[in-house]
Image 1 (cartoon, rainbow, N blue to C red):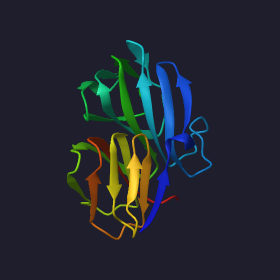
Image 2 (cartoon, one colour):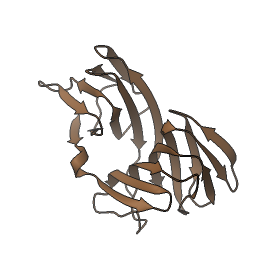
Image 3 (tube, rainbow, N blue to C red):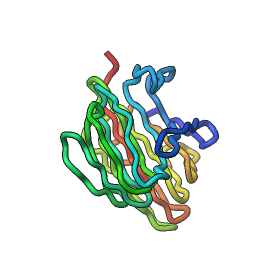
Image 4 (cartoon, one colour):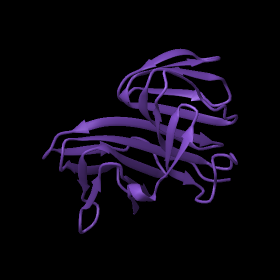
Amino acid sequence: MKSTHLRSDSFSTDLWSGGTTTQLFIYPEHAHLKNRDFDFRISVATVTVDESIFTVLPGVERKLMVLTGKITLLHERQGTKELHKFDVDHFTGDQKTRALGKCTDFNLMTRGTFTSNLRGGEINKGSKGRYTIAVPLDWLFIYVHVGEITIPITEAPQRIRQGELFILRELNAKIIDFEGIEQSELIFAEIAGKAT
């Protein structure tokens, strides 16, 4: 199992019409959102206006999870969905989507044969947690939105702080154990697929 620990100072933040977006990870490494040449992309966005329009992204599958606040998504073809903390909406990027409300959200975009899943949760300070991998994965991303955790997958446990991303590849375990150093909110992003 291979691991990578990305700290918040390695992320890039850009403006969009509704607020800001911070790219946490993109694959392949030299791909760009504007070029639409990525297989998958993970980001955190803020929506700071009462009504916003999402960028149309043909050929992209999107999953959006609310981290703070609440938002209502109005999709051109998929109807309306209200999202609160840790709620997820899955929609295609080629349709017009309008958002009502202000929030911080976690975004996962995939293209081609790549598939994904998002889960969020909390762990108390001093508590031990366990994440079970139910299906074969190629990547597991653990984002600490609030707090701090440790993951004992090496001789020296990995300490993941607020705003940092921990990445696991070539997973040879079905269970990932972790411990809350502080009261923490975590997002787990699963990715399966190979570049063609």
